[in-house]
Image (cartoon, rainbow, N blue to C red; front, side, top):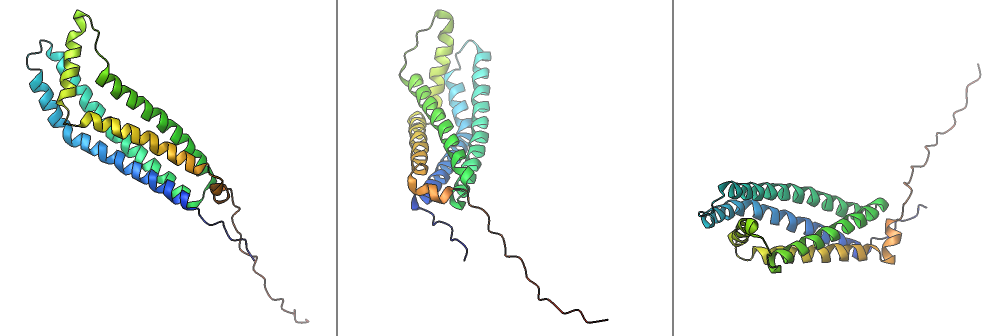
Length: 202
């Protein structure tokens, strides 16, 4: 009688669902960025009509568009990875749990870095020389050009990302998950037995 595989703990399903939710939110945020980038660029150009350095304005616009596209591509790649990890967790693959811990660690670092960047841009006063005031004006104009609530949304998503990865990592470290994600040998089918036939005498 073959040994029954351990039953999947509910926390594994919750962790997998949280990963899928994070992937969905990340892709939705990237799509929202792609849909709003044209309006952001238009408002930024309108606010910097009097800027003497038009090359700097064009450079900021190029940077915004490039960053938005790269963010969307990265969000799709990370989303696909999180979904793959969620499926691996549900299937009880041992290596998936370790890979998820690694991704959670990287996600925690990225989320904390993004949150620190948002806070620095929002609350740190500029101390610039006379030759850097143009860059400060362009940066302030760009911040105002984003849709209403965009900066708080970035901060909220960064906090949610940090908390989400932290919760997933803690859930996968619970003792009840060890039995489900330990390496289980694949069951082999029993060898087929053939009935012996007597050999007729010659």
